[in-house]
Length: 101
Ligand SMILES: [Zn+2]
Image (cartoon, rainbow, N blue to C red):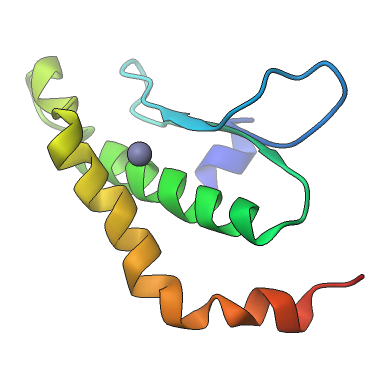
């Protein structure tokens, strides 16, 4: 909710927008930014879950006193994001059942 209120979610694809998706930790505020190109596919759901996992990691580490501790190496960072995918995987079918075509 705080990310939406601060304008830190750029999720929907639009003409001319750069491709890809990522979570970008912002050290000054500790509130990360998520960028992606959603087009109403299952892949979008997986992407927001993945990047959301990185965002949770950013929030959890935001109060650490040493800035370098807030940026773990990828083998640690991907643990949070891929865990978000894995713990939600059994519910992914909800996306196809509720999707408006
Ligand atoms: Zn990742």
